[in-house]
Length: 270
Image (cartoon, rainbow, N blue to C red; front, side, top):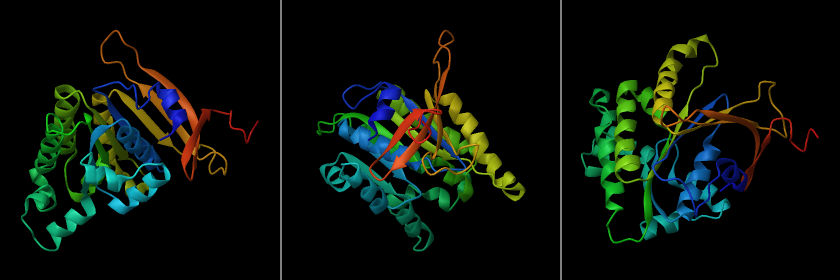
């Protein structure tokens, strides 16, 4: 958990805004450090967390969370954390052709045109089970890392946006929980532009649904040892009278956290 980012967002594990949909995106850099931040943040807050890890293994997230002072293994054993390991579930679908309840969550791998209904059912059952289920956890939280990967598996942008919409209606509106989703947009050369068009459209659609965006990018000037990139924080107004507010910060990722500072205020350049 990054204390400086909590200060920027005016939040803490003891006091955070309910019903919030936070969208994290990156371009020409890696914003996964923010997913690790929000995972440790909501576990420390005592929330029931449903984490869709579609791109990395449980051991990967566990090792990084350990450095941030949070044990995912203990959280899962206590029932606070429900983790869907997309890589393992995919093997069950593609290699073994299993039809168990667990692999039905990933039915879109067999038939991308069917959309993400199975994945939504998994989320709905777990977040609703967190309410009145006997455990004394806080509001439910959904984390997704990362949603854009389903596009490369044949799922349409519309189906991905439908999934996000229904998750938001259930988690944020119905249960007053929180959502954090990561979307990646990369276009290094002309050959990749057509593939990247879908993730760009997905990003634009999700921006209209969310209440807070953190858009992470590399530095325009290129690589720097002491500044790893910049993040634009955008608070989106939820009604006509509220105006969108934007602030730009630079950051540096450390082994056990990250530092955030105003542009040009890094200790390396002062």
